[in-house]
View 1 (tube, rainbow, N blue to C red):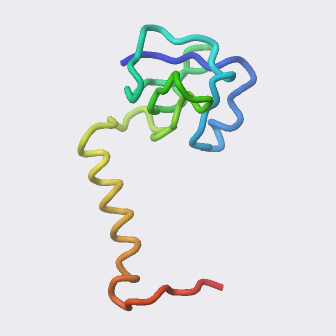
View 2 (view 1 turned 135 degrees about the horizontal axis):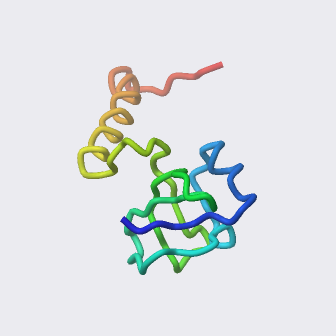
Length: 102
């Protein structure tokens, strides 16, 4: 997996789990990832921060997906995320109307 190195001082948004990383926050890319590849984001010391989709054609160069280094982002990971999202919305399908949360 290709490593993307974050500029010093740009960690705050990542630590707060913001899903976007702008191109200006990247110090360097080790290798040549294709757009859409999953890359590993590291801080300037080489510590893991997140996994994300890479895109060098966008100001949002990384779309962060996972902040746990021990989780492998693969087809199974995506299936589980979609299953949780669908399950959390199943109440809408059962009632046929939206539920208002105060």
